[in-house]
Image 1 (cartoon, rainbow, N blue to C red):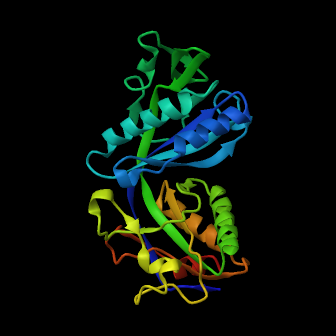
Image 2 (image 1 turned 90 degrees about the horizontal axis):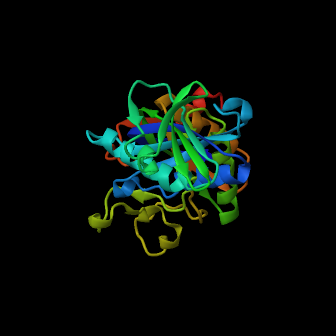
Length: 296
């Protein structure tokens, strides 16, 4: 197995980090998956991921929980956009799931006031209370109440770290992808908004009105049709693992952990990454440097 002498490009993002709790694991998983589903930053919206699952000793209200991150691309409108996107995902992904609550899980001075877009779902019957040592909004709903911390912090982070696994078969690609995602789940501050991504994209496109399109030089099914195909003869499948993190170091640590986790996958030919000549992001994370730092 070869590690290509290349780098991935990553870029700035804005992130909120939330703790979801619920009465039981079924409801908790429903809320966590729904709130983080459908990565949509390519449409100018948001994306998210589950950082880790929490036991009862790790949550404000003593129930099982999930630590999730919600992200938007960074620009001058990012704080306003993040507030809107966070409220949308909370309202339609979490509030509607029975027994759920939401708490802040980030120590940062910049905050979203959840009253305007979530608290007022109580239509004026919502109340502000102090529970679990926190200021919360209690929203009356038809199955009891929805509790959300009044202020949710956000901060600048790093989006778009990535790895490509050039594999001989679909089976080896899925095995490598699953192992990488599991390894990243153990890294504090990192998420995979797509888990295994089957459809890596590129900045250039024939159809800019729809956003990024398929990275055709790396599509194995196009090898016979493209004179400029970059897919090796023995490769039939290339999963991409996209990584966002609260810091550049957390993204690097997650990439390193993912690479180490797939060392023994049979059928993995090459580890590479999305490199777009600096067109995508200002951070360059070199794969060879990561393995030197880990005594590969």
